Length: 107
Image 1 (cartoon, rainbow, N blue to C red):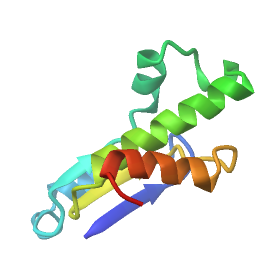
Image 2: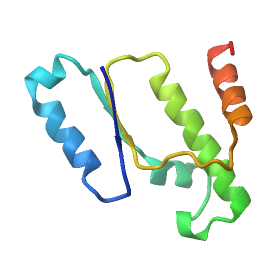
Image 3: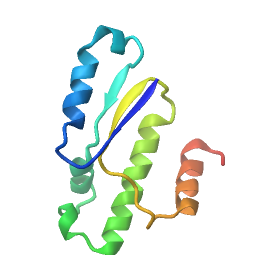
């Protein structure tokens, strides 16, 4: 089972996921919780907060975030994931396909 919790920041997605992961019946269907970690990625990339990014920095961050999510999820089929940061249309489908192809070796 794959579960994606989506919504704005600070709405309880992580809390809900943590509570679900405590439930034995739920854990029999899901192995791992994959948190958003967008702030950590911003720091790793040497970028400031989301509010201070230029359009190019924002696009770069969104692409890096998307690539990280794909790499975390591509070989798994039993997880719950925090999707507070959704990729915007700025990236474009062709760029997403390129990232997927480079990660999976196909597409």
